[in-house]
Length: 546
Image 1 (cartoon, rainbow, N blue to C red):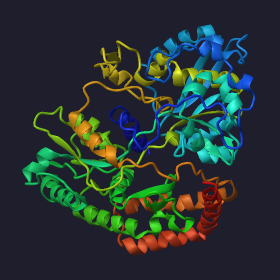
Image 2: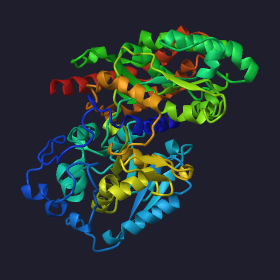
Image 3: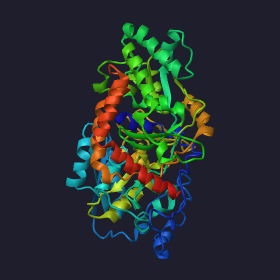
Image 4: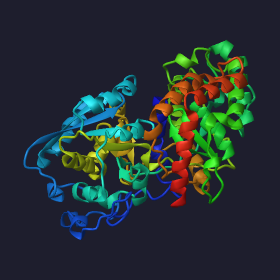
């Protein structure tokens, strides 16, 4: 999961301008708009802070946005308070400096923040415990980071439009109106989503110098990739030890490349518990069209291809327990390919720092749709146990919309970790390793689509330009499955899937058909049908309202 998340955020700067079909990256004030069952009716409430908002840019990215205490007249700032924030991931080297500058900036608001990081190795075990036993005001969350399960437990403070208007006036002004549906579950808004939706086409990157070595000039389709991987396994790995793909944990990223051939979307993306359907232009799928991924012929054929590559030696037999991500292995010249979105260019450039190494990225599905990252893929929530939800909301508002603080948390210290040119584009410095762009999880949740990196790889630009006419937003994105009635069944099925799916994706099984059959039986024995029935009922009820 760590690799997948980091790959998503590393691609933001490369895809920020290609938003046709993804929804607007910014929006006007949402006063009067529906959020679940809540509507702002009180005109005085809806215009809270309007006087102090005068003169601000019409949209993020069109000028400097500066928060002032006067904007938060409904927040009691009479006493100094500390807002405790919990993030996931590793602590950047320069974090203490960023935090000090943050707290200095917040002094006029009679506020400071303390931040705790749940490391990648610990967050799955510690996340829920932190919410129940720790002192938390704000916490990073996402569909892949316990958002639904914790919402079902009541771990998050429930928001409404009036609360946002009073305590988050900048977010109320600038947040894309359509984004709120994605964090609204059963009529309750439980988190604040990011303010950027980005194209998320899937690519494979390869060592082109190695491909040329064996007479492979380019990759045009999935079969070409299979040939490349088997060629490297047969001819290069015995010579240099470089694997075709230095897989680690699973091959979920390669699976996303594979399924892109069939124009698929996920109606539920919950760790390995994924429900999939084939997209038909302009249509919402029926519940009967949505299947557990592992019951589809598409996944079975993928698993068979993975076994073919595993048996050929395309990756280590210990791939299940490898701790070095395939991305890092590629950048360190231990792997000959990786798969994911435009973040692959980051690792291509890393690999190309070695003389003689040449990388290339290929879109194997040029005639297929390109999906969008959801607004809700990265979110911040106020903890239900927050001692002061209004103060926490104010801090989040400043993080999301104040230009200085927003860029500080996304890029680090200007002049030290990055510089800005006359066009407003940023360039990371040689000290960016101490605080790289989008280094912390909060930065993924507070992005607005206004940041663009200077001097981007022209190969990435060529790829993203080719996506512009193919971008499609998942039509089921605003459907949120509330699994509270079947949480135990879903957890039991999830345990089965975690036991089987990684080894199927890595081809580390004796018989694909038999293994899938056994996995599916254990899923149904664990209550899968109960979960599917609940999903179908909720989905059809939602669809009837569209």
